Length: 123
Image (cartoon, rainbow, N blue to C red; front, side, top):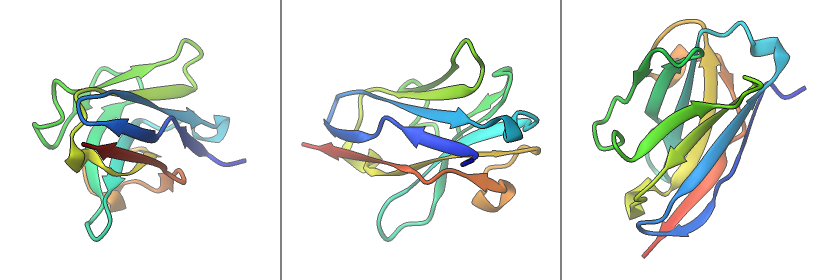
């Protein structure tokens, strides 16, 4: 079973919106923190948002994400969503869901990763 499965990526025009989903397998229900990272071609993977699994702690390392991106959880509590609005050209990247037991903002802080979902923003 794949522990984390992302979906919801796609192509969108600048100013548009997308909602990414991350389905968490039962094997990772003990995780304390989750995160969304992204990686554009030729660039390092960067944290978009880190949050506790109970959503009582949310951290956007870059202020440019606040106000545009929000986190939510489905009622079954086995999926998390990254709602992205007012998308910009620079948001084009592969987006990854990740989980772990400790808070961190570096990719190496998280041991479990999904395969990623591509987001492409065009003008």
